[in-house]
Image (tube, rainbow over all chains, first blue to last red; front, side):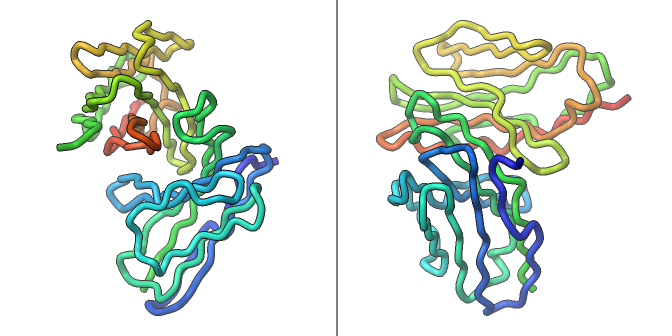
Length: 116
Length: 114
């Protein structure tokens, strides 16, 4: 069983569209994250949730809206997609919050988003 | 200034050679954490190690070893007797501040040639 699974793996869409990426973890972790990795492999955190509560909200456009229906799921919805949104988006989870004793991150396999 | 610097963009070695990946960090906090993650060609990031700022002991795990030197603000990673499967992008990261948000280095692409 995949520990952190995100769908879809590839997403190709037109500018201006709205799309969602889903993430689920079966590890029983309390904390989940969304990361963006650009074409130069640079990783940047976008959001983090702990027990469905938002704990990290980096400076990302408000076109990006995370939703955590329960602590095993953290979905990412993107409105009015732009060319610059093209990247690989990674979902991750950890047993503990950032700085906690068990902060090891488990990553999903990524979603390659291409905006045309 | 970058908080986590991985100066080596790409390293290429022949299999069985030893290779060291450098990581230099910058922080004013006394409590912080350092990490290494591996991203193989398949794309998924894999945790390798987490070290807290109060533990300067070097760590060895099989062919992998880490050298943490607070005096030089470095947390270097060495692979001994490299193998083709070690080919990946390796990221160093720092966790600090009030929310211990992870700050990532730019990554070092390691190519192991057979």
